[in-house]
Length: 172
Image 1 (cartoon, rainbow, N blue to C red):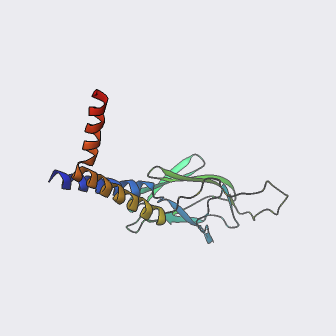
Image 2 (cartoon, rainbow, N blue to C red):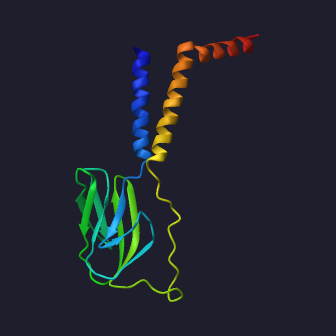
Image 3 (cartoon, one colour):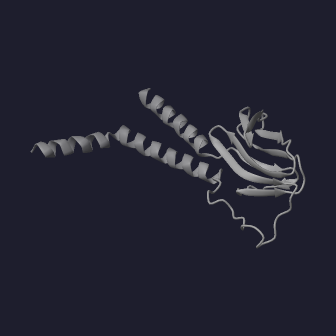
């Protein structure tokens, strides 16, 4: 029974580790502009007062900080959230955060994307968006493989015999 409880504990632990490593906070749209999962340090939007939409952990709070003001919205049962950004034309520092994850960018409202050479070149953030799916499957598979190997060694007491043999050799 102890072995079964140990197996279940390790199984649950690996599940929660895989959930923790998965990125859950996304910004999908700024008004009609789709972000296509990209993370940039600056975004341009020709309109004003856009609705920011994205995904987060279902039922959790998503904080949106615009300049110094912070407001919160709650992700629905599917994890979708939206926030109406009541801001006029100009440059706005935005930080979207939830459950320890955050996205920050400078949003230029009421402006078009500058042509190359007029302002600093915009580049994609060097911090990659963690991919979900493949990495989760790989992590779970690796966890299950490690659990199986540990169970096999425990069941056959190979690890204990190896340790006992090394202790006996050290005494001689």
